[in-house]
Length: 227
Image (tube, rainbow, N blue to C red; front, top):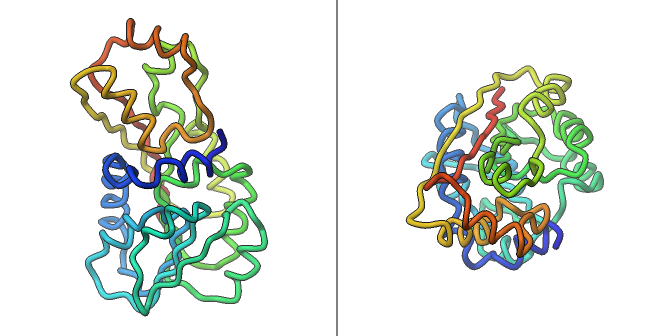
């Protein structure tokens, strides 16, 4: 199942399960100065970023490739929602005709097919950026237990690409999320969208994980890139 299909399938439950994503958003918003009045949100999902903003906005441009997720985004006179994919260059051809105080992407750019190209396209918008990107040590022990290679790019890989385009600060933060049991943990993985790039756990790997996973929590690694 591809990324778009996974997010679309779980759009109804996403808000309930995106706990770490909301923490990442709050971290980004706390670090952004001055507070932007016009924002481009790449990979907006159901609108968690917009809902967390506590200052006046003139304009908010929300982009997501899941029609079902975008349908749940707040609507207002100063919000424009666009069904589009940030892997598609044509989106940026249109965005270059607009002006933004800040480009924000939280918990989305890890799914870029060509992150180098996406960074380049964002840089061409000539606006400061604020990103939260999940990286390879997310679910580190889970993948090791299930003998599955890391799903995401490493911090070093993302940082190396980003330094080519952005004069930014880089900070890596590790989060944990506790669960009562492994079944609850697997339910979270399925519903949250964090495992979106592929069905990482087949039946055999799932059974092995339930039997052998040594922790009562999941690990998350998030790289914050802020200009």
